[in-house]
Image (cartoon, rainbow, N blue to C red):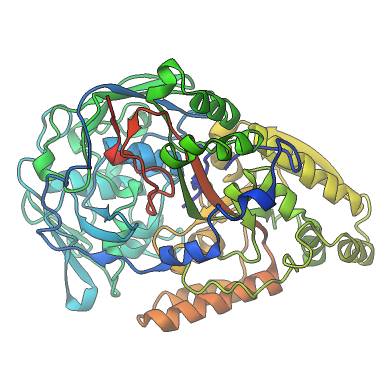
Length: 600
C-alpha cells in the first residue's frame, strides 16, 4: 500500500504508505544519541512479518470486546495535514484513506488485532473469513443478517457484485487491482476481459457468483489462499448498488460503518457523526464510543505537534490520524515524561521510501546507480522525524516483509549512510552525465520541501543540474502515477498490504501493470522481472516463495535499479490528554481509530 501521510500514507498507505514527517537534517534539536534507545528498531519490525491467523464464525461475531475504561459520548478533533485524496473505497490505496475507511466502510473481511499487535482475519459483513473449496480456487462468503447502509437500505450479495464489477470501470484508476487480476487476468488485461457494469453486463457466474441474497462466491483459475487478507483492504469494501453514483461517489460515499459523513468541505474540514443504522452486534472489531469526529485539515506535523503537546482547550480532545511528531519538536516531546508515558504511541511502519527513476526518461543504468550512491539517506530520514521517524534503508524490501535481508546493501548504506559522493562522481564522469538536467518532483509539505533541498544539493555535488518541481501533496500519487508525468525523479513510499512480498513486487515492479494510476511508478518493464513475478505468484509453498521474492529483490536492485531505497519509516504520534484507547495498530501502522474514546 502506498503511504501518503503528509498528503494522505499512504502511503502508506500512502505510504503510505504510505506513508511521513517533518524537519531539517540537523535542526530542531534532533539527537540520535538521546532517542535511539527509545525508538523502535529493526527487531521490532520482525513481529510484523508474522503470518496472520484466520478466524472462525465465533471470532467474527459482535459486538467487539469493550476497551478498558472506555466511556461513551463527546467529539474528538482530528488534525490532518491535507485532504483525503479519495473517498470512493475503490480508489483508496493510501494510509490516511485507510484510517478513515475503518470508521465509515466495511467489507467481507477485516482484521481483529489483539493487545500484542497480532492479527486475525475475521468476517466483517460476512459470517466468517471465508470457506474455501476446490483446492483454494473457490471461496464462498455468507453475509450476516440485518446489514444496512446509512440510509437503511439492506446490504445483500448484489451490492458485493456491484462492488467488484465497478472496479473494472474506467473511472477507477487509483485503487488496488489484486482481485480484478485474480479474477480476470494479469497486468492490465483484466480491463479487456470485462468492461465494467456501465455496459449493462455482469461478470460471468464462473468468475463471480451470487446465487442468493446472502451468498457471494469467487471462482479463480488458481488457488488464492490470501483472499481473506486481501479483502480486508479499503479498495474492496462495499459500495451499495442502489446508492452508487459512479464517478460522483468519490465526493459523497455512503457509510456502512459506525460513522458517516455529515459535512464535508474539500480541503478544509470533514465532520463524522454516528451512523444509527450500524449494528454493533454485527461488528466484532469496531466501536462507536464517540458521538463523532471533527476532522480539520491544513495542519502540518509541526502545527499538530505543538498544539497537542501544549494540551490546551480543544487540543485535550484532539488526535492525529497519520500525522507524526515533528522533528523540530522531538526533544520537547521526548523530554515530557507525562506525555511520553500517557499520550504517545510508537511503531515500525512497513513502508520503504524510495527515489523512483522514471525509466522512460532516465534510460542509462549507470546514471541511476550514480544517483543511488549519492543519496544522503541519513539526512533525508532525519528530515522526517529523526530516529523516531525512520531508519536508513538498505533494500527495496522493508524489515516487516518476510524475506528481508539486512545484509543485502547494494548502495553501501551501512558504511556511507549519507552517500558515497566520490563513487557517484566516478560514474557520472564515466557516463558523460556532467551538467545533465533532471526534473525532481516533490510534495509541498514542510518535510518534503526540506528533503528536496537535501537531495537536490547532493545530486548537484556530483555534477547534475536538478530542476525542482513542487506538487500539491493532496494529489501527489495521482500526479506521479500518470505514465506521462513529465518528471525524472520523485519519491514514493510503499509497504506490504499483508505480510508477503507478493503484495510488494507485483504492483510496484511488474511492467505488464503500467497504466495511469498504477503503482509501477518507475515504469520498469523488464522481461525477467515480469516472468519471475508470474512464476513466483504460482508457488504455493510459503518458504519457497519467500526465498524467490528475496532473490528477485536482489536482481531488481543490482541489474535494473528502477528505484533507490532511502529510508524505512517509523511512527511516533502524540494525542490530547483526554483521548483514551490509543494504541499503535500493526494493521494501519498508525493509531487504531476503532477504539478511541474521551476519558471525561
